[in-house]
Length: 153
Image (cartoon, rainbow, N blue to C red; front, top):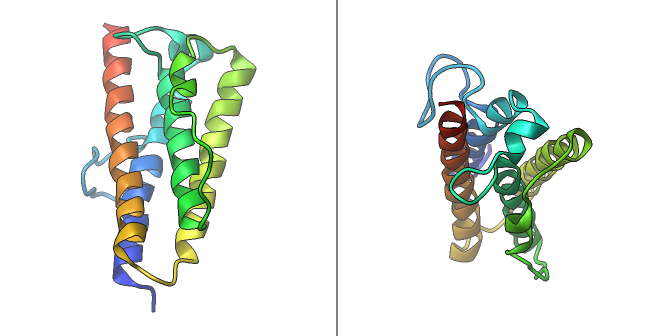
């Protein structure tokens, strides 16, 4: 039987990235496309490159991907070299780069879920890292959704 805490972490991550399952949700809108992937798939490279309050959706997306990669690295017992500022320098992307960003986000998210499946010890550091991944990703989902609204008005 799967550990209930790990199951809950995966449920929250899935809602953040994939959107809610079925007719209900824990915190996003209860409709298809409410997660990060659904939000991003409706955007063009031009949309992702439109500056809103000093940043772009492309930068927010890459930053979220980077955080997920760092979290997964720590869960794997690695201590990666980090450059938190790099993603915030992204001001525009072309169609190929935007496709690459969203694809890499999907890959790192999938790898994180796989890593969570292999967790055998739930010490405070491990649990905090997983909960941090949920909170951080949910924060950027909200930021991106607000940026979409702002750029469409």
